[in-house]
Length: 372
Image (cartoon, rainbow, N blue to C red; front, side, top):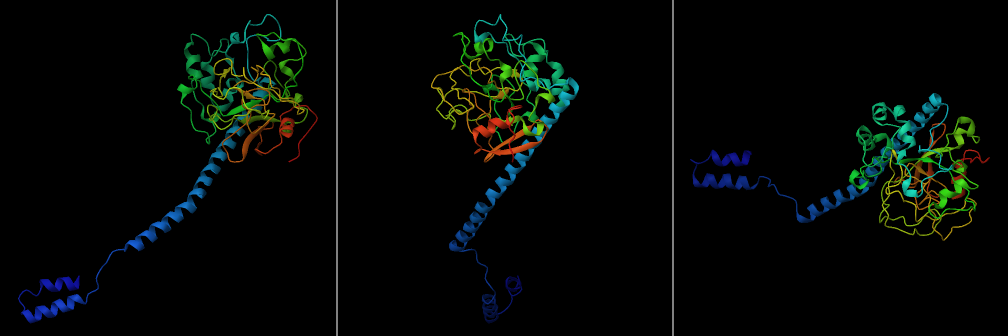
């Protein structure tokens, strides 16, 4: 600034003196910008720093999401404990109209009622008493036509039922049903040979040598469990696990828990939070099955309505459910899933867990406990 101001104080000076001022001005330091090479180097350094920091930022965000997911499962586990304290039993996986093992039964699977899931029953214990009161438990929660407050309740999305790592679904893609990323464990089922009605497929075995209560898990369709039923101990029994709500249609998972390709890879499914049914009433028509002793898989399709959107048959962890086309436990957390135990604790299991070990963890009274 001193050099520049010298020009403005010297207009009356002689030409010689002006020349002196100009020479003195030329001695002032000149300001210059970055060269192209310098600019490219700076940009490259910034890019490297971003590349190094971005994975760390993403990992931190995922850690926060996983922590929130863990907290959600703890809240659900506490709700189950409180439900048991009040009702002296855990809720069933779902409520149907009547006992499907006892005739008369609907003539076709499509006649199954759309009724309430276990999540409806624990709503008062997750600070959703107002939503619970909107639902008429004496009526199917999903019917034609839908009915008043029950219809509105069916669409109410509860944040505690969603894993933050899962992208949110547009309810327009879920038949306007609220959905969830947590499912109750039905355990596994020992398949038997029985006379079956061609219209009813697997359900007909309920009238034969097996019934829904033979499911090894903590939740069944027609019967509730108590603390005393959990012979293996509440700290050794999985009650709830994560279920991924995305990627089912045209997604990367195209094999079931049996390890064989699904018969239909274009089926769009999701986990309804409150409605005890599949997206179209026939979600498992293309299911394959596998016995928990490792035999199978069968090449034949079996209809398995017990694998409903509110629950999972978790014999196999990494992909689709073991006994049907319906998915088993899964998540978008890197490497595995969060699981809620019957005692309210939460543990993380790797995707690489052996399926027979996973089956034991989900059984309430098989006499086996798995040491960590």
